[in-house]
Image (cartoon, rainbow, N blue to C red; front, side, top):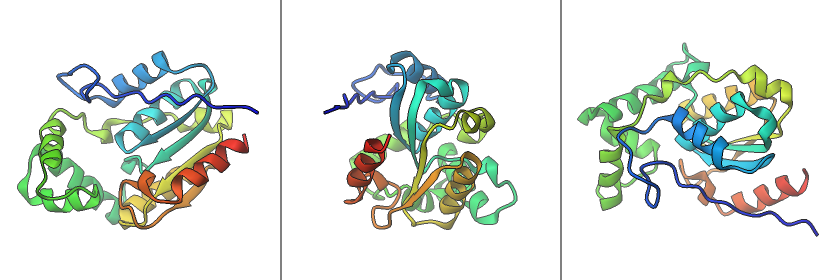
Length: 200
């Protein structure tokens, strides 16, 4: 029986990885391609999903499959008010705008007052704006990499981004309500993931 080896890389500036002055999705994409074995199944969340999408657009032949959990891809729908509202919340939060804090933390499924939230807020000031990402999705689509786009049905702007990305990539679409942005914590997620990988 075939088995899969699980590798869990930690992005730069996330212990136990080394500290970094800036968090950049392109740097993360290069790191992913450097450390992952050839033809890997890749599962990533949020900004990590964005960096995986960038990496897969650069080198689609390296990916056996791709599972993207709520990546920020607002550039796909520049005229959608719900999408741009979600993007504005994220940008305001990254700038430290107090008026964006509560809305963004709700969107990200983070508690308002918690030590981990405070750590994330400090780290967010280092984050490159994900709106600067413009991966060439056509290359990934042409390679026909089996892809799933996953969302948690907790915010219309995020649902629409995931719908648009899935349509562009011809991806499978999962909606798992109940865990907010952290869809990988949904009780059905691991079972669905295992069935998806078994079908490869």
